[in-house]
Length: 123
Image (cartoon, rainbow, N blue to C red):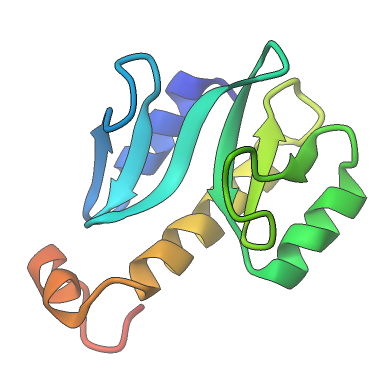
């Protein structure tokens, strides 16, 4: 997957928005006020930072040691950097994006969830 693929996939999610809060060259996907995907490049190749449950983050790093590393400039326990070099299959990457989105959405305040239109108890 490319950055454009990830953006297109992420923007299909309820309440998702693309913003550039840090740099005009650094696209960030949000759900409400929470980041769920930060796109950039790390060590010269395109990458994406995704939120993950700590146990899942560790497992993903073990499964793809060359392509999934602790989150660059993020909390290393809760974020992974996924290098978009084709090592991680597209379907697996979509699952990682889904998990990141859900974790971010769950951490939204109740009023934000209501504004976005999440059904009560859905996230």
